[in-house]
Image 1: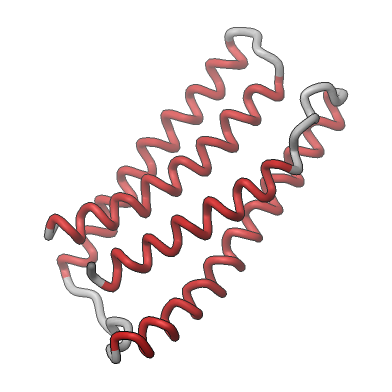
Image 2: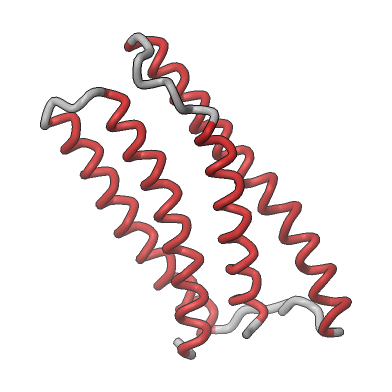
Length: 145
């Protein structure tokens, strides 16, 4: 497994832990009032974004340290055309999944679903699109572009 694929695997594990830890705190918000509901979900998304960034920074630093000790090789200091191509394909996949989830959330509103349904769809869309990003990295690095 390449360095980038291992890094993406660690990032997937971190995202799963952070998302479900924060999402479990949002259970029971379906019965909240409309203005309270929007405020709660706004706080959830801000917390999720900040927690994802901080957790990934810390975990990637720990991963780099452990990887260097275990394999005696440092992280790649440059990226070539292959790395940039893989990154662009992974970001493309992320965007497709995120847009599909966004449209699903808007369709839920169009079909007169409760506002909480739209927020749940958006939360899972954010999570799933992040997984698709990292799984794309793993797939393209294993396949060789």
